[in-house]
Image (tube, rainbow, N blue to C red; front, side, top):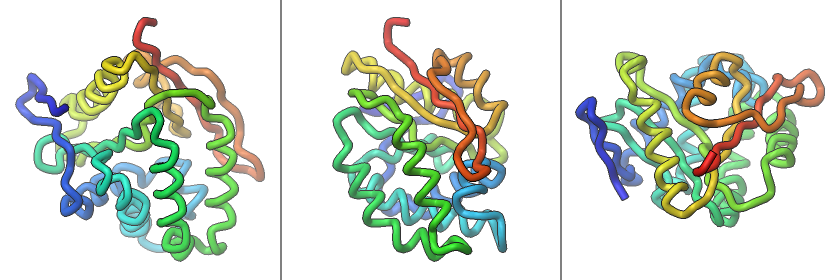
Length: 204
């Protein structure tokens, strides 16, 4: 399934060779996201390290067709289908050692935080919006909303819901406007960021 938006850009499954360009969009978009700031640290060139993080983490998802692109790198999203637990574990295992090199503590906070997040994600058949970002000049033009609605249409076609997590407070009403609702929120252990867990269902 691919789609187009009334603003004039197509949403397409990104080929693996698009990984670097889309990782740059995601890396820049997540520079101020507390989830990555906490788990990876804010030392050095943050945008470069976060871009490398997405290259490592999303390599498996790009190969499996779970990385989506709006226009020509105007935006990017990773939508993990329901029943794709094995793919998610594969991405985690394949990227873990490389991601640890981006941290200043050997990956201790990274592992601890994401294990805590994973334990709070609903244990049921749901699509998962792992990440979404829009390149700087396209922000506010509807690209992000189009990428999110596109994934929700994929979930709706399977009569399943979707979930996501964020630690950016201003993201919460944005996602609520798109039909998500808060199902949990809490401070992460050891001084980690307050994190919201949201869910969307097709017939709410």
